[in-house]
Image (cartoon, rainbow, N blue to C red; front, side):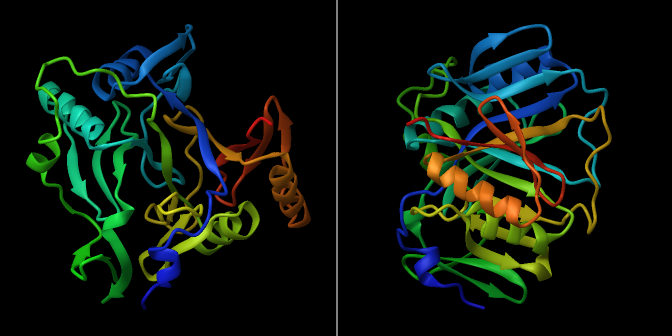
Length: 306
């Protein structure tokens, strides 16, 4: 069925939630640090024996926790991929060129609403490097059970097509071997999560946390939510690891927790009230409240400082 064009193409409002730090358990912090620093281009902010913090311009985006005993394993809920969003075509070109020069395996993909590069860290955890292009997306539809993206000129596209690499690299200022690290404008822009029950997770994030519906396709085991604003893809949920998929066993590489940042204390109090009224427990901790979604994915709820 066709989507509501007011959801898929119009600027709805300011974003109701954004992302803070993402915490990952990894098997070899030194090796994984090399990926995130040397290949991706995040800057090292702080490091100790058990933990490394990386980000941009002194702002942490990612925290690596050493000590996992095995890499990512299939058949479980948890992280599908995290996405670092870049501020412009030049920065997308720079990171694409760094990946090409390094020879690191990657998949440049055109999603209409974004230009993206997909790859995996040494433990098999997924990463998307994305440039938001919502101005190219008109609406979406479902054809024979598959989502189709309709651009602003009325042309229909699959949800993932090959990216025009030459067009992206045309924005590269130079082709020096050493490109600069990711810029201050880079941020965690969205997450894709494996969940155990699509309907339960979708209602949890929409009705309690405050995300907004973009796509809900239970026949594909897939849902997509926005946070308001012009970009429709802030949180994706899927059951592609199986209905009822449990959390990974202890000692596995994967998502420890992510951070959801609400605009202020009033908004945070409202979300916590809805969670508690629905029977969800939260755990106070430094900086906010820890919450588990119905699949057991853990996140920190916090608010922008006043």
